[in-house]
Picture: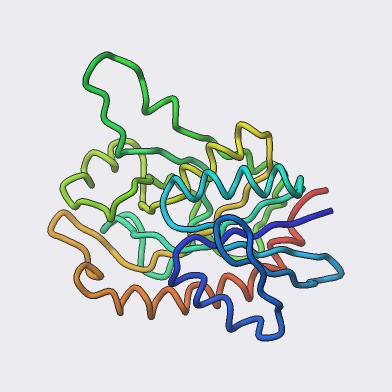
Length: 224
C-alpha cells in the first residue's frame, strides 16, 4: 500500500513543509519530496510543480516509480463569484482544459482533455464538508472574461494543474483524490488576489494547514 501526495504551487509547498519539521527533504526530477508515517502507512509528499507541464510529468513519474494505490492532490483554486465561497473545499469530480485553441480544423480538444474522476472508491458520507464540482485548468491565472464561458461548461473554479493531473491519472487507471480550497474569488470584473499576491499566500497557508489536518480522515474513507 502506497499513498502519494502531490502539492503543486510554490506557496502551497512552502505552507506544507513547516508542518513536518522532522521530515528529511530529498530531490526527485521535478523538485523536493519527503516521506512520513501516518496511521502506520508510509506517505510520500512531492512538490510536483505549478502548471500543466510539471503536473503531467510529476504524475507519470510517481506512477511509474511507486505504483501508488492512491494519489492525492491538495491545493488551492480560484472560485467563480456566485458559484462558491472563499474557503470552501472542492472535491473535484471533473476537469476541463480551457487554454488550448485549435484554429486549423475541428478537432474536439475540449472533450479529449476532459476527465471524469471515478470516486466510487471513496466512502460516503465524506469525513468533512466539501463541494463536488468541476475545475477548469490553464497555464494562466483566470481571465475574468472567460468566466461566463467556463460557467457554461459547468466549472465552478479554476486552477493551473487539476486537469493535467486528472488526465494522466485517468490514462494510467490510477485513483486520484483532488481537494482544492478556494483561496480567492474571481468575477467578470477581476480577482481579489490579482496584483495582491499576499492575499493568496496568506490564504494558501490556512487552506494547506486545514487540508493536511484533515488528510488522515480522507485516507480512512478510501475503500481498499
